[in-house]
Each structure stands twice: as C-alpha cells, then as structure tokens.
Image 1 (tube, rainbow, N blue to C red):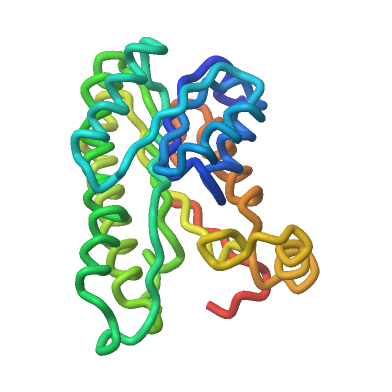
Image 2: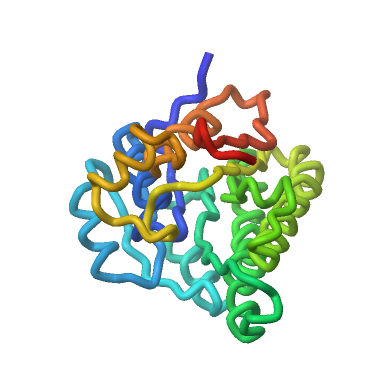
Length: 243
C-alpha cells in the first residue's frame, strides 16, 4: 500500500538545481503540482518548462522572512492547499574554524536553519486545518555524525535534525508527518559538479558520490508511504564513502 502523490501540491525550496531540481522533476512525473522556490529566476523558469504538471515559479530569498511568508501565501492563492513542504534550500561551507569568515557562517545558519524554522512555521496552520501534510527537510550525514572538516555546516545540520525529531512529536496529532532526508556526498553543483560525464564517473563508476536523482527517488519513497507510516530519517551514502 502506498500514498498516492497525484495532484498533491508540493513546495520545493532550493529548486533551481541539484536535489531540489531533480525532486521537482520526479514529483511532477508523479502528478504533483510543484512550487519552485529559489533566488535563481532564470533557472526556475527553465525548470518549469520541463515539468509536466501545473507549477508556480516563486523567486525567494530564504534569508528574507517576508519572502517565505509570501511564498506560502502565493501557493495557497494559486492552488488552495499545501500538501508537502520540501525544505531543501541550503549552502555549504567547509574548512578550518580559524580560517573561516563569521559573516559567511551567519548567512549559512540563516539559510540552513532559520529559514527551515520559518518555512515550517508558515505551513503548519494550513496543514493542520487540512488534517494532513508532509514536512520533509534536507539534512545530511553531517546531521548524524560530527565531520571535523565542516564544523559550521555540521552544526547547522545537527540543529535541523534535532528540530525535525522534536517537531514531529508536536505535529503528529495534527495529521502532519515530519522527517529528514540525510545524504552523504552528492555530485551536484553544491559539490562543484556540473558536467554529466563527471557526475556519472564520480557516482556510477567510482561510487564515491550519489546523484541528485538518487536523493529525489528517496524523497518520493518517503512521501509515498501510507499515512500511518513516518520515515523519521532516511540516511543514504555513496557505496564507497568512508563515513
């Protein structure tokens, strides 16, 4: 038994590339109506033209709280409901702490943590009124183990993992499911990959990276579980990533 996705309204943040774009394509193929949210307007419109279902392009800066509220309101105005929030927007900063830039850390925390809090807060009243909804957050293997070469990024992913675990218990009585998808290294723009041959080499051939499409497939699996089933965390790694 599965939970059909056909006709569901899905907000995808960070939709212009990588995991977000791959997920938007896959869920559109499953019949979902997609809200594409990101700062990269041209990329969003290009992606929208590839989708097979109704969609809404909504430029949003995840560090601007008013943009997040406007995104949710425009979704409701356009589609009348919100079935899924895929809080996927994020940035990555590795490196030694003594060589880092605290201003860049603040921006990372604003996108990776604060915007997730705000997106979740904004959709709760509407999902609660429906008595149903899915909130899925892109975490990372860094949210489950401490990775010493990316302390700020790891801290951000630990924060949202804890947030997801605790909020899940609060929202379950409202009919809302909450979970995280936590991949290891993914061969996409965030990790400096853009050439498809290089992506295939690093993932399929060398098995050191996942593809964005692998993560998208896992997202679809989580969302398609029967309503009584919650996948609290799905941690996935490339076969040969040594973590």
